[in-house]
Image (cartoon, rainbow, N blue to C red; front, side, top):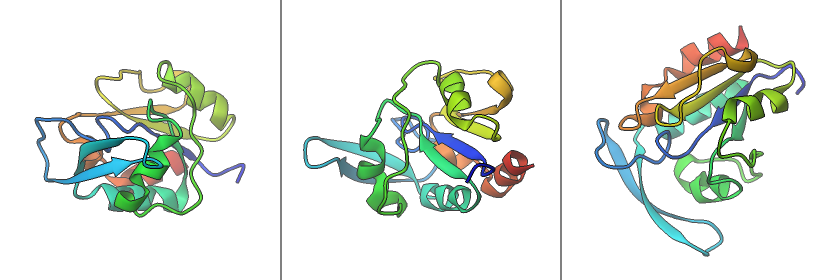
Length: 148
């Protein structure tokens, strides 16, 4: 596991899109442990992109959704039963992910509203348009880049 690249995923603007959207989406009602409910729009290819990334990378939630991300999104994204780790950070996400990844290569996928410079702290920050989210990601290309 020590050499597996790390992909940090934000939720808002990456998986859960707000209006307006510029890509086909599906509407879902999500909840975590029945304590809250939220309507979200998810790009139609989100589950496929996340699955492809998870084949070669360790996925870590780097989102204000915190420990709720995996539980709420598991049915939509067909996630494994065991939750992925989350980093309890809302700001300065690249440095938090870099600390977690250590010597491993890493990439943070975040919406362009979140900011962050590519190459910061030795990794890559991929900023996606929050109207398209993860639909902008070429999973095969990203896997090759982060693994290489």
